[in-house]
Length: 250
Image (tube, rainbow, N blue to C red; front, side, top):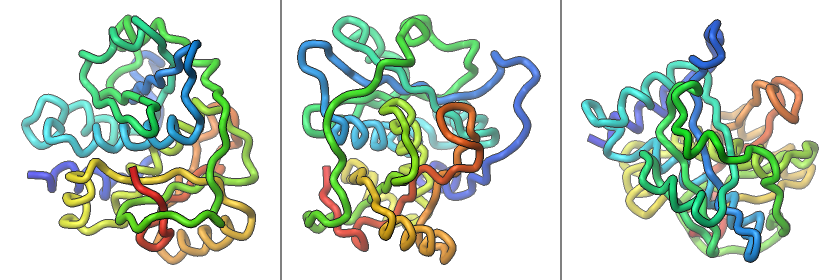
């Protein structure tokens, strides 16, 4: 019954008041594998992060009656929040058995976990550092040619400066919102293919075109709450269908 997970994402409206107790805030934890000796590249890490987030949301364990359903339902009924952390070596291996999905792209790995109360975060995740996630490498731009992939392209706002950790959370949100650009059948096929997508850096002209697409309902935008790094209401990432954007796949 893939339709439960699809409907949850397509029906997401966001907003709502924060709980009085900060420990009751609901968030998806994300862990980026950043080894000291062989660090990942920025592009591969962001693609992996975006795929991991949406793979958790569309996983069959999140269907009605599944073990992940309650956590995903509660999270999508509140504000969508993600917290990105870094891990290496044993730290990375230790979190692989916690509820979540690991995605890989170009040798880069990220794992997203089933959302829950911030106060209940497993100690193996809680002890991981939130800062220090920046890595080398540039994102491809809109002028580059790519293969024919029926997926998503996630474009970062050229007017914002965001850390890799912040960007990972934002593209993770964009991959979720981008599900609304598929019909149910198309989304199921996309999920079955591993949720192919790309992450790119928009220039000013491309961003203006994308904003028009958002207004027309043919693209989906992430508007950040402004808790960290950017001003409230900032449009951080825009998702569009990759068949339109002609992007590379996984």
